[in-house]
Image (cartoon, rainbow, N blue to C red):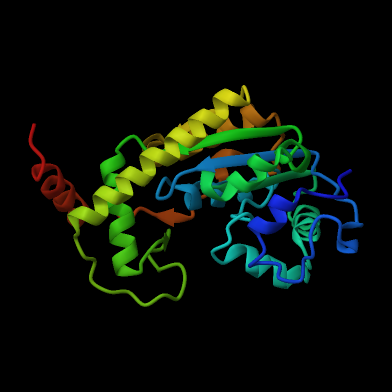
Length: 264
């Protein structure tokens, strides 16, 4: 069990836990109890993580995947829900509350959000016996265009019935060559960071791409269940796809326009 974490972790989340006084604080005396098994989804933005996590949750045996390490809203939400005073309390509350009955905890994270834990050298203590699922997208230009379109329109996800997820107001999406190019650069860096992480830590993740997930979601789900070695409470074929793809003619037009602006 873990009773203290490095000061670097506290510093990384200082804005989330302003009352945290550091690793030596008496707030850290409650020992952290890690999950029996962790399903860690190493993802990139706009790679189908909402779709995948919605399906994993329906199995009743693969945790309740969420962005528990994201400081852009999710951490604040769960911090307030569990009244966590510091990062160690936060992780204890999240893990104890968000495991399925078989002891599986699942989270999805970008490399940037996972990085403070990795740099601390405590990732293995927080997530022992972790199995990694690496979720990417083959068509990185389409991925960047999806991000640009979502960012400028305010529409990030739709449920399977076509209704928008979230309450954000929507606007007309704006094409911007420079912005799309910057998103591509960021995606490439994220891929490199994850690949380096896997190499350095001798991790062989289950690799899934967005395209195959959309084409055959139930087969992908069966592969994940087999990879994790768990017995689902619900048969994979009976699980519904919870989201709708947002790509439309605008996406295709933008991709053609963007690629047409480069010549070799």
